[in-house]
Length: 143
Image 1 (spheres, rainbow, N blue to C red):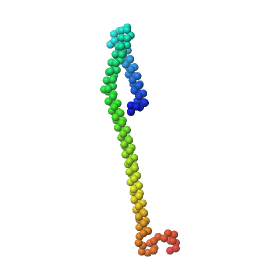
Image 2 (image 1 turned 90 degrees about the vertical axis):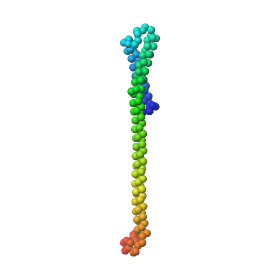
Image 3 (image 1 turned 180 degrees about the vertical axis):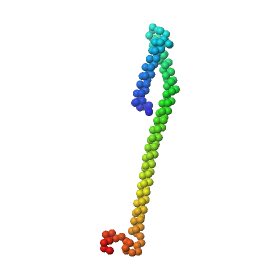
Image 4 (image 1 turned 120 degrees about the vertical axis):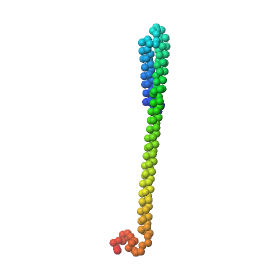
């Protein structure tokens, strides 16, 4: 899959939206359970704490992506590219093989025709001892 593919870009956008919704949900859950955030009444502090929590979760998710998924996606893309190239080369080799087989068949037919023509030429140009060996076209009934 190439990076310019529209389906791939759509998949990236949906993945980004999913990750962002996950980050917001994680930050809200952390605040609700008061695991990380103290209870605050100032909305600026609460917003800053949400942003800190989202950044922290995003860093962890990015590290997990790098460790577990990116290499596998690159390997999958590499294998897919290799398979595409091997299919193309196999098609090209098959076409060349068919062309070669056809040229061999045509060469065999040409040699057979040349042999038949040479045989007929020898029959016509050969030394004949009597007139009976010479084929007279259309005069067979007169003999």
